[in-house]
Length: 169
Image 1: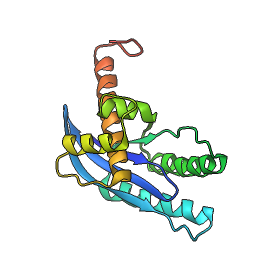
Image 2: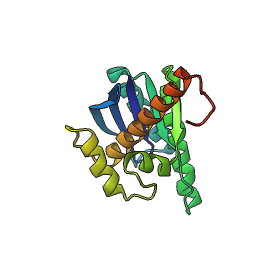
Image 3: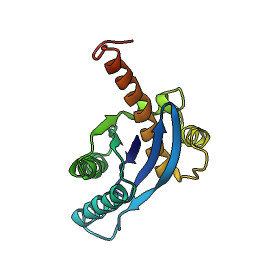
Image 4: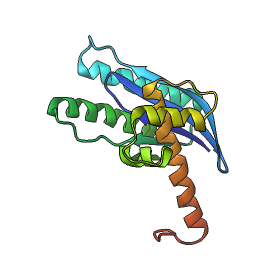
């Protein structure tokens, strides 16, 4: 299964693609979609949408996962981040991909083992889990979202196979 992870941001939206075969993870690609800060917000959102659409077209993931927005102290920043997040949800949905969402603490806990891990710890663990990746901070966060989804999707599939959907293992 090929998974697209997205870490939304108005300036830089990180993306990461991984392949999952059984319990093995393989790095495929990663990068950022950058918007031009000199443009109006609508144009910047369009740049993010088109950039994510190109990634989807080029790498043909089967599922997507997006990091949820945490509450920001600055309302204007939170609104802008929410708009970028909306685009990160829309682009894969328009391509027909199922889209999952994960809270930042769950992503960190899934990758590092601690929901309050520092960004540097997440990046280091991503590089450990995905040899060959040399992701930037935004792309490493997106790869972490993809890894989190891989773990949770595998658990959900196992539950369905055992007829335990909706019950805890």
